[in-house]
Amino acid sequence: MEIKLTSGKTLSVSEGESLYHALKRQGIYLVSSCGGKGTCGKCRVRVVEGRYEAVSFGNLTQKDKDAGTVMACQTFPLENILVEIPRQSRLIVISLSFWNPSTSGYCQ
Image 1 (cartoon, rainbow, N blue to C red):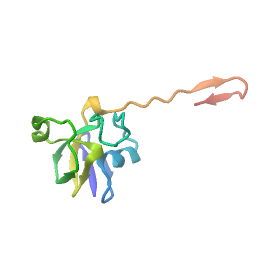
Image 2: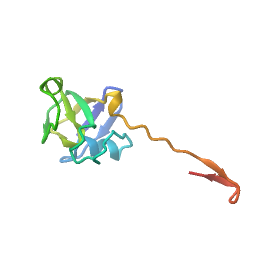
Image 3: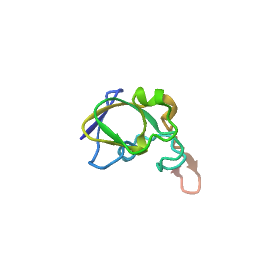
């Protein structure tokens, strides 16, 4: 199965794999202070098209649910789906490099 993002990127998802883990496995990180256990409600995404199973909606409002908003860690695609990742759900990962004079090279 595939997850197509509204940004145009297409990712693979295995049967029984949550959106959260499929995205993370392919380098797309979501805010998730609980680590994908379904308790913080930070990994919200919107399913635009496609069928899925959401095992929990956590603290999402009925309005959120009606708009297709789900918690990625609690949502399992049943077919190819189209997903929008809101800006507030994206985790920005920064990799820093610095010069180490003792090794005469860059370290991360």
